Length: 142
Image 1: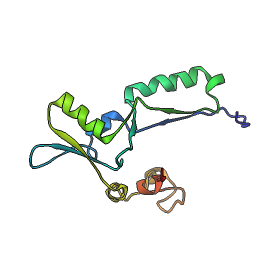
Image 2: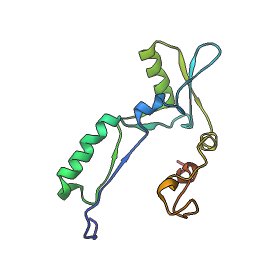
Image 3: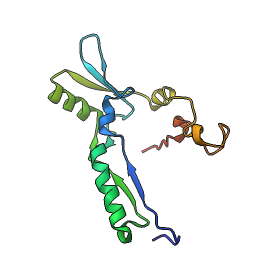
Image 4: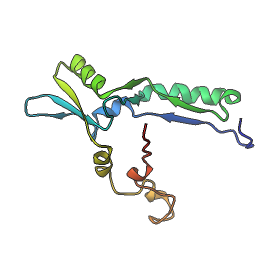
């Protein structure tokens, strides 16, 4: 339990399931018509997906139960989905052929915007607390 006089909680989520169809993560259609999901998950990795609609329930619980949520770091996911699972689900629901291809994480980081996150509302672009999206990405060897 924290010793701070201020009650705090952390709610951490994985990638939003709805975002899989967004600008960057949308599957690419190959010449033969197969939809290809290119993600840096490796052969055995998975994404802890979360649905945007499900997050509010957890936030509400944290506010309504401060005696239980104070000092809590709550991680929320609806499913841990591998690249192969994602392609299989797409095939089953959309009826289109799909596959997963692993790509290096550095390829994803290189494709992220170069701007520092939060720079529009900060004291200045050179604020040392601001980072680019790649700089905020934590990479761990598992």
